Amino acid sequence: QKEVEQDPGPLSVPEGAIVSLNCTYSNSAFQYFMWYRQYSRKGPELLMYTYSSGNKEDGRFTAQVDKSSKYISLFIRDSQPSDSATYLCAMRGYGNKLVFGAGTILRVKS
Amino acid sequence: DTAVSQTPKYLVTQMGNDKSIKCEQNLGHDTMYWYKQDSKKFLKIMFSYNNKELIINETVPNRFSPKSPDKAHLNLHINSLELGDSAVYFCASRLLGGEETQYFGPGTRLLVL
Image 1 (cartoon, chains in turn brown, green):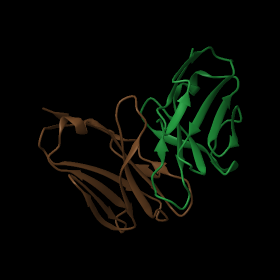
Image 2 (cartoon, one colour):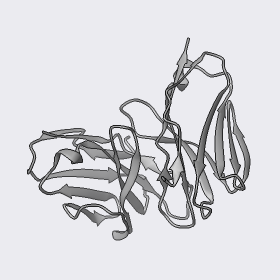
Image 3 (cartoon, chains in turn blue, yellow):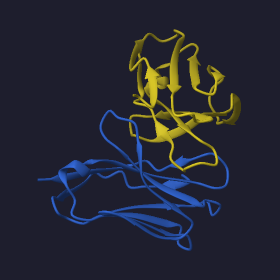
Image 4 (cartoon, chains in turn blue, red):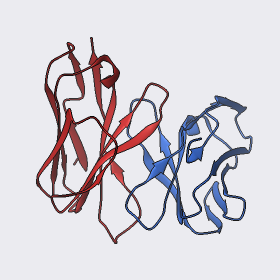
């Protein structure tokens, strides 16, 4: 079993839809939780970062962490075609090593 | 200005060859990483250097040898290339103790024939 599980999709939604992306993890030592976005043929870029449990909002994006369930989510409101990308969850404990999920491919159709 | 740059962007080579990939960052970061992304987009850390010191060394064949001549550079040399080495290799950098973001380079697409 992988430390971080993420459904690879693809997830296809119409423009304007609310998108929900999720990851589960098994290592209870994880404290820092991130979502990276990767466009085709580009490097990943950090989208959202949350420390420990709770919610964080940034514009159309909301990240949620539920450490009791070992479950993290990323919500995208009013999705746009420009949101079409691969979304990678990532997490780490107090060490330096970041563990990534497999990534979910999102396609937003106009 | 490119924050994290990698050369080459594409590398096509024969099995058994030796090749190197170079990475440079101009962000003033002290920590650099090598990741491998396979065909299924799974991104896995290989190595990390902090101030030229190796701090992460995952279970990677010893045909892969990283080298950090200074804080701004991290190179990856691969000996005796195998078909399974075909992947995209990403370099990333970060300031330890600073913001959480790792800044990734554009990737080097390696194809071993």
